[in-house]
Length: 203
Image (cartoon, rainbow, N blue to C red):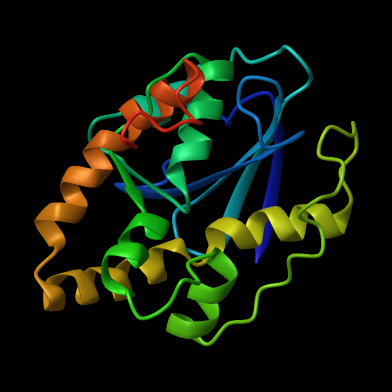
């Protein structure tokens, strides 16, 4: 895998195709409190582009253009969190999106294990290391291990989508999944406005 680290934005003339895998690393798991530190992207070709942000510096016009491009589908795992982070810090509504976590929950109803680690293991036979998940992503200089971990979070999303699309089609839930994906940016907006817990859809 080739990792390309960029400071503050993507480089000019970078073409990641019509479907790009996206993930983020943050200082914590509260979108209203914690800051965005890194955004990872991959076209599924073995190259990974990592955009590192200094605190409060989120101009990134090229990254924003990609995230809002209606002709580019953005692949996430647990998109709800990443979309909220991107909305708050970059000020963009990222769409259209596909979420492997939601897709997995719609078709892998025989298990309650829908994390990226389990999806890669069960559907692709790949064992992901999560050792760096809780490291300091706000550091000015990220370690080689951190960069490799961040890249691995987007490295397999294209392949997972292919497998999950097969299962969605088999189970007759492709349209339902598409409707869920369209709603995800609104779900993230509700989280940012304070309706994460209690969930507005609960009784």
